[in-house]
Amino acid sequence: MTLSTRIAPHLPYLRRFSRALTGSQSSGDAYV
Image 1 (cartoon, rainbow, N blue to C red):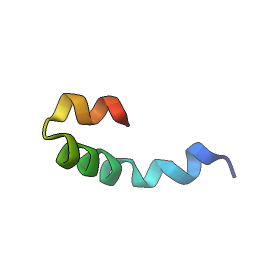
Image 2: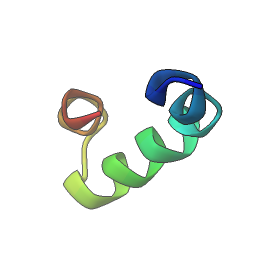
Image 3: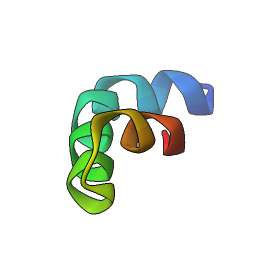
């Protein structure tokens, strides 16, 4: 099982978390 297939189901949560941390959607998406 590759890393990307393990991470894929969690991407929406990671993006939401990074957006909350950075305070903006575009910069949050850039980190993920």
